[in-house]
Length: 82
Image (cartoon, rainbow, N blue to C red; front, side):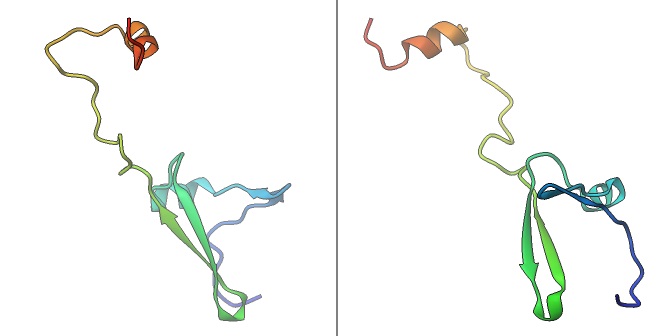
């Protein structure tokens, strides 16, 4: 073990490990984010956080048109000639 200080620890359960709350807060890790794992020379592991807040619908605030819609009926009728 190296002389570097330890920021946080977590245990592996099955094939999963928890990310300590302090680390999640500091790196702004949230549900849906992706962790990319890189093994460096000498066995050091580097983790890159890819935040998913910029996805296709991240800025979508809902329908703001002039016509009222009925979601269920509009969805069910999509592509069906009636």
